[in-house]
Length: 249
Ligand code: HEM
Image (tube, rainbow, N blue to C red):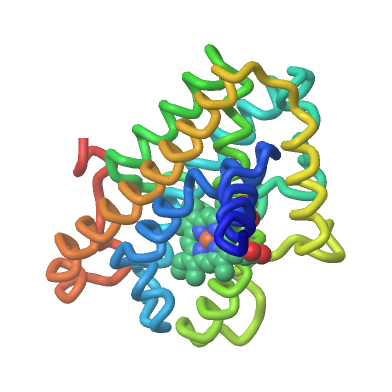
């Protein structure tokens, strides 16, 4: 009897009927893999460097540009509308501000990204054009991540880089939200309100894992870019370390 009870408890814990719970359960292993990339491990150890952070910002800029343009374009789609929160969540302007802080007014010419970031961006654009409902999976992975572990990463970034003010850290800040925790609950309940066929629901879980995988590939590529450029960076001024957008075609 006890065994049956606990089996049932685990069943409901592992495979709840809410879509948000299903996405969380389906991406659990991917989350562990993302946390264990070299870049994220460096982060957790407080070892993030300015070149690492600047490169990460460049990729986040391109990722959010694609994500937010596609969310805007599909804002009235029945699956997108419930999770469309530009006032509360939009990151593009915060990233522009941070990039200007670190690279100066000509920052647009300094944005460089690895191949994985281009692939991520292309995936989001294709999803936006062909299967807008699956934008929910991409919004979930990025925004709920930013509102969860991302909040700790913001504090670590400030400490690791020895930044005395919030300049350069706008990305981590959500002034439109009084409680990230409560907002995450709202976001999850909005995800749960989306009506999907069983097939699309499975597609959504797959896309959420794809989204995590694309993030992992971006982190791995950034790490490679840094190891290629570290030796150059020792000889040159730090800002000139990576010069060409075509370095990683
Ligand atoms: C949730 C930590 C990296 C996406 C969480 C939570 C923690 C956490 C503690 C749970 C918060 C809660 O339940 O309220 C971390 C740490 C990371 C990291 C320490 C790396 C240093 C990432 C990355 C992504 C990500 C790279 C995706 C790109 C998510 C998502 C959630 C989450 C989507 C929400 C899960 C849900 O409630 O459905 N993270 N995370 N995380 N994280 Fe991460």
